Image: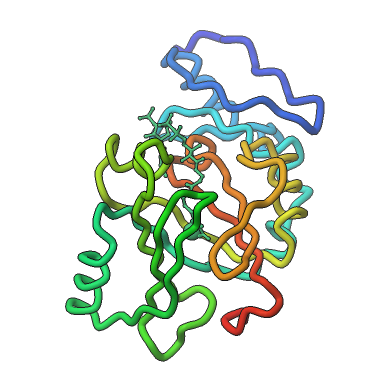
Length: 212
Ligand code: V0V
Ligand code: CO
């Protein structure tokens, strides 16, 4: 029999604090079962991580998903040696480099690769190498080793998408979008609020030939 733990308070305002991690297994079980019963409960329980995710105070108001979401954009992979990683994907899969850039704001050197035929939106691999020891990417490599770093989604308006997601209670990292690849504007959602994968929002520059 599960102890009747107090129900979590419903978020009252648009600004919802970051998700607490549930360490009490009984509370976790209670929340999981309550969330299953009560479809209007503004909380979701991530069964894998035990993290309570306040996904939104009005999850069903969004209904059709994130307005302005255009599709997948790229998958980002953290690597310690960019040229070695490019050669690896070129030799193994025949991927082609369509763009290279150093982003000093993000402190990364990056290469965009595609399968060739359909080089546009949604079909790109972004290889990222840190440019500085104290960069977030180097911290990631030191802590977790090379591997999947983020999944990026193209949106028509990154400010509006960020604002909507913020209202849904996830931590959007920047108050204002920052410079991304090929003149795009980007923002991120914290991986601890998405089940473990850093989520990037990309609004492509209007002049970008790869834009759609
Ligand atoms: C950190 N963690 C991650 C993660 N980075 N988990 C999944 N995916 C990632 N990428 C985990 C980490 O293992 C810890 O979990 C926890 O989050 C906190 O780690 P931390 O070391 O304290 O975190 P920080 O200080 O490194 O910050 C993490 C965030 C940081 C996400 C806030 O990476 C960030 O600001 N990212 C946004 C900028 C960015 O990533 N730029 C590079 C891509 P445990 O171990 O405690 O469980 S630039 C790009 O994509 C561009 C330019 C583009 O596409 O145009
Ligand atoms: Co990216």
